[in-house]
Length: 297
Image 1: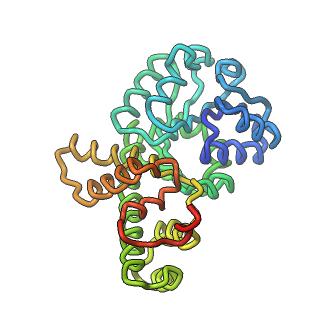
Image 2 (image 1 turned 90 degrees about the vertical axis):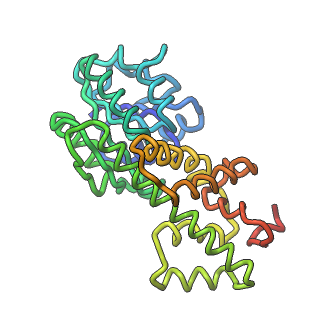
């Protein structure tokens, strides 16, 4: 298929590379010249800062921008692509957005004659580049059927949540509650170990071989042990995502005490200047401890 991928960040680049590797003609869209160069060097058909240049040649669109505002802009803004797409082109919205935003996008796309798949993703940059993401998708059967070659190229598992746009977004928001709380809890545990004078590499080995482990602890706390906060997924991403979680709780009048605490931790880390650091840097909110790499900062 001729597929436009909008947003060549860590996840979007992985999706684009997986599509190229699977033999699709890929049009990459990103304002950063270096991202466009990377995907062109990998074999993409074309790339540039504006999807309008490729809209008429596109058979499917995958959107992996940072937030709902960017989704709205690239689809429906002054330079949005929807008005230029051939009728019936499916749009797979894989950005993490609220249920309400997903439903709004779906309604607007339907009005203009396009299908939408509400399809958030998980797995991180490594899984994205391997074409092994988990996709939690909702939408009409026609959207699933048309986008089947795209899903096959980028995903190891595709969960068909329902045919109702917004349900995919809801599942991703709930998933992000767990992901954010796990990172925050892991950071708290490792901070306590540092305060108690336990070597963090030892603490890490114990937890990752015992019942207290989680995928997030094993992945993110390795960064803490290594003193490596190069961003794979940034603190500010979880400020946004846990903000969506707490907003969902308010909308449903449902208390979320752990998610609210985790949100406060990430927001505090961002305010302290760590917003663009790896999300494991949420551990920096704890005072009175020395962490690996601190003396080199």
